[in-house]
Image (tube, rainbow, N blue to C red; front, side, top):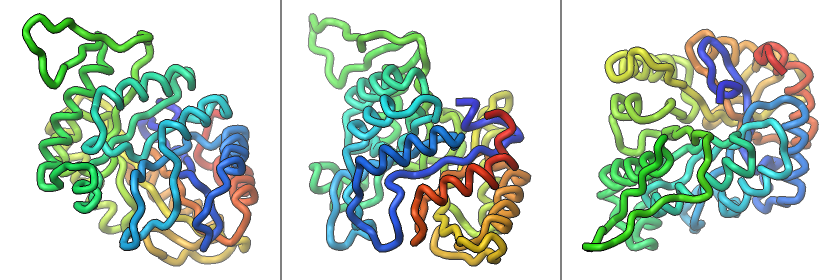
Length: 307
């Protein structure tokens, strides 16, 4: 976890799938090859999304694999890079199923897994699963409590119901490694709640002034809720990396089109402002392998002091 989130440092990761602009059908055999390349080149994390259902009015047309199946494949196809969910929809999955899956991925990856958790934001999807979207805040808190207990040290299974004479339960195989829990988005919770319960807060990119204000709000919450603990702050950013290294940065939705020199300046400012991790959602006509190689050769050495 320290290779992804560390005080006074910035690490860089990538979000899967890595697709050319306009491509909506991923070749997941190719994605595994790209994941190995990112691992070998020194990227620090691979992020996997949880998109249970697609619809005509949903802005993301990409068909995403089930996150647990993809994370299992990544665990055995990579060696050092952290694997992170960005984010498992905590409100639409039973927390004990999530706990079992998280323990499994963490074991297969030799303790490289970070469990990012979100609440989902589409009322029609809640309805499809028989859930009430207006209950998501309470569902998120209640499911987090059950999940955190099941993954705690020592672990403790909180059953939904416990009839008289019911046995106690445990999750096996047992593991000495901890699965860190990360809030991705707010989940309808206050920043103070997130600071108390999560290793950190992962948010979408915002323009610099708004991002500084958001980070200031986060630091104030950490000082109130967990003043003696390290709490990470991370950003998911869209990146259209130009093949002209000198191209100035231009804002695009949730990120930038930029050459690498301006990108280094953007990342340096984020590091100075307290951001600990940035994951890039690639959106470019360039081959993803070429972008990975350029990042590894010319950008990562500015930020990753330890291979």
